[in-house]
Amino acid sequence: MKKEPGKKITLGVFVIAGILLFISSIYFVGQKQHMFSTTFRLRSSFKDVSGLQVGNNVRFSGINFGTIESITLISDTSARVDMMLDEGVRKFIHKGATASIGSEGLMGNKIVIVTPGPPGGKEVQNNDVLESSNPINMDDIFKKLKVTADNAASITTNLSDIMENIHSGKGTVGKLFMDTSFADNMNQTLINLRQGTGGFKQNMDAAKHSFLLRGFLKDKKKDKDKDKR
Amino acid sequence: MKTGEIAQTTTRDDLAEEGPSFMKKVKSFFIEMALLSAFMWKFFKELFKRPFEFNEIARQCYIIGCRTLPLVGITGFIMGLVLTIQSRPTLAEFGAESWLPAMVAVSIIREIGPVITALICAGKVGSGIGAELASMKVTEQIDAMQVSGRRPFKYLAVTRMIATTLMVPLLVVFSDTISLLGSFFGCNLKGDISVHLFFSQVFEKLDFMDIMPAFIKTIFFGFGIGLIACYKGFNSDKGTEGVGRSANSAVVIGSLLVFLIDMIAVQLTSLFS
Image 1: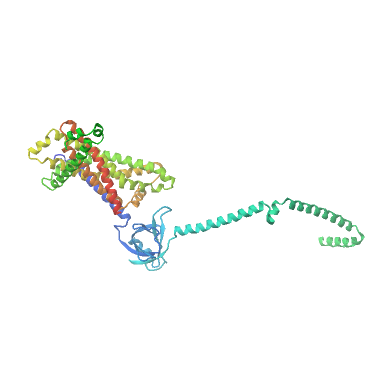
Image 2: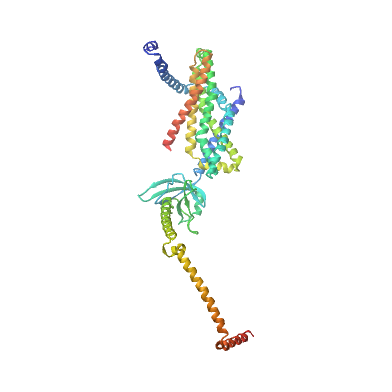
């Protein structure tokens, strides 16, 4: 190795390149976790953090600008979440901003979503406490879905009973659909009605030719012709 | 109790099953462990003694690091490419193809990269060191060095063990990087993803708890490979047959040690994470 400077140079390049690659990977991971940028802290309290973990992202306008620094249980009904956010985003977060817990996707990690707050307000300060809006709990959704499903089951049971009654000819609607004698009666009624109206038409034609009504009918025709003119 | 005495009092079946040979194996295992521990202790004692043999360390680093890089690089590239191609259909079933870079990166950096690279090093470097030292042993070159006042353990074993301890972690870093390039190539075979987006997705899901334990365990992998190879070389039997046996056992025991260290490392990582 003493008389082989080429090998030494190769080894030097190899070692330096390896160390650089390792350091750059550390840098990129650290940068994603905002370890090498100036940050400020915001706090918020939640009744239920829904599985939020230290290191999860904090999102503002859909962009990751920080991470969860710590989660501490402060009472039996609330947990305090400390967030480290990039200093550059502070000017966009105003007093009155809120924090809520969301999800990166259906199966994704939990995140904290920070809303900007009312426009024109003062920008938040380090260690400020944000108001929190509690997340939609999946358990609550499932509970409501269960009630809806129970109601649907009850409705379909009743519907099934009604259909069964109709099918067996019970009740007014059942008789209407299933009773054949009812249909026969209806048919007979219609025949009678047709015969009745036929007879009535004949009577009216006979009345038109009667001397008693002839004058009345002529006057009516004259009035009609006048109106036409 | 002597082996002959045991043989007289046991039947042939007992001998075949777990008679004296079994006891002998157990005994020899513990003796090997004791000798290996003594060898390791000697390494730490010699490590801080002069002369430091920097030139020999550099030469060994060149042989172990630079000369193994092409093999490690090709393996790493294929590893990343194959893992990506194999994982794609499963992720596509769930509509989670965008998770492919992150998933492959975590698999490679946490587990596959370090272990496969260490196994390659155990095969190439371990066998090389084992065979080289064993042949020096059987041709009495080590004895000659001792007689001439050169400290063979320091010059031959310590330098090689330092070189493996330093070079295996660097080889793993190169292997991981090349694997990620292979994965990027694999992602672009059936999809279209830019370099920037690929590495952004990779580093999005990586954590220090993925990188640091994986890197630290590679230091132990390197030390273990060097230790076993040097031990086997220094304790080779006389004769050319012993050279082959030393090289072979350096590879086998070195590979086994890599898995053992990996198992312990995973347990420790899960304790702290």
